[in-house]
Amino acid sequence: MEKTVVLVKPDAVQRGLIGEILHRFERKGLQVIGMKMLRLSDLKVEEHYAHHKDKPFFGGLKEFMQAAPIVAIAIEGTDAIEAVRIIVGPTKGRVAPAGSIRGDFAMSVQENLVHASDAPETAAAEIERFFAQDEIFAYEHAPRPWVYAADER
Ligand code: IDP
Ligand code: MG
Image 1 (tube, rainbow, N blue to C red):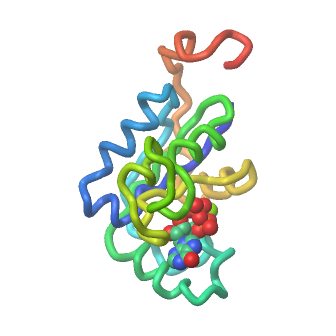
Image 2 (image 1 turned 120 degrees about the vertical axis):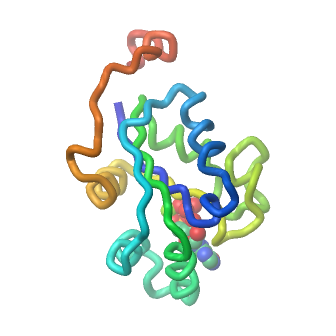
């Protein structure tokens, strides 16, 4: 089982898409193991988007990410990092495939509704960044035997 992090970005919160986005992951069979609304501090945005810190768009990206609260969701499942990234779709909303969250609801590169961890190391760092230990819940996911074959769980 892998853990991963989704951030519902300020544009999605403003557009009333929190439920729609959460629903995409729930109905896939992924398990929600943590969820909270928060405002991103300067430190957290700078850490989170450190790979873009020197890009010309960083100032605008930071302002966008702090313009409204976000919702952080921790998700667990087999190969969850890859499964979640496929549901999210590629960065540029207007060319993201229909059926993905960005493909169905986004036109922008920046205002693209969701963040999803891209690798095991970033997923682990992002769980620590956004959740305290007691905000991540280990519990039996009742549908698991109906979602996975025994050798996939
Ligand atoms: P990802 O969210 O699809 O993983 P990254 O390349 O990791 O994409 O970029 C992180 C976020 O930074 C994007 O989701 C988007 O909001 C923003 N971003 C990326 N490239 C650009 C750009 O060229 N202009 C403005 N914002 C960008
Ligand atoms: Mg990324």
